[in-house]
Image 1 (tube, rainbow, N blue to C red):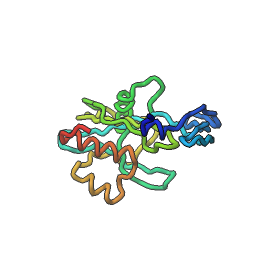
Image 2 (cartoon, rainbow, N blue to C red; image 1 turned 90 degrees about the vertical axis):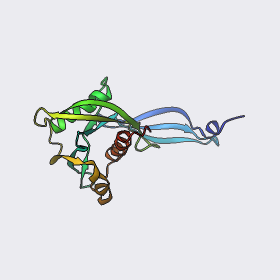
Image 3 (cartoon, one colour; image 1 turned 180 degrees about the vertical axis):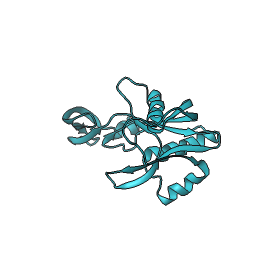
Image 4 (tube, rainbow, N blue to C red; image 1 turned 60 degrees about the horizontal axis):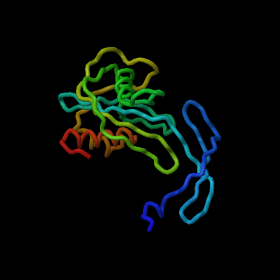
Length: 186
């Protein structure tokens, strides 16, 4: 007898790449759904991302005030970026903190890995908790943020409610870090 998972599983018969560049790969996937219908479904593939929640001894989070052109919207975000080929996501997270903020993390641990848009988009996000950081230089590379500040954790819920924090990696990271720091293992 088939399990519920087996009865609802889609079968992939192959994928045809229709667009590919450094930032995005778009494919058409030949899929068959449980009732036997077969069709092509779009699939968007993005590189993995690594994001860090950096918390200091005063229970503040290192955050960046950024503009996102696609939405013409400002918001507070955590430092992070794309994982280079062959690079460990934890290394990426620590590197991105230093490049984007000028701070070098002291301790770092994995929080959670998730897919923010499951269904048609493969965009693995790896989130890390860094405890402590020291300022070692000015941020380098392209301008990432208008402001870089240590935000008290107690202010985070109000910032979310106002819409000042709205991106998925930042929201998931802050909630996961809060739970880890409060002794909850998700």
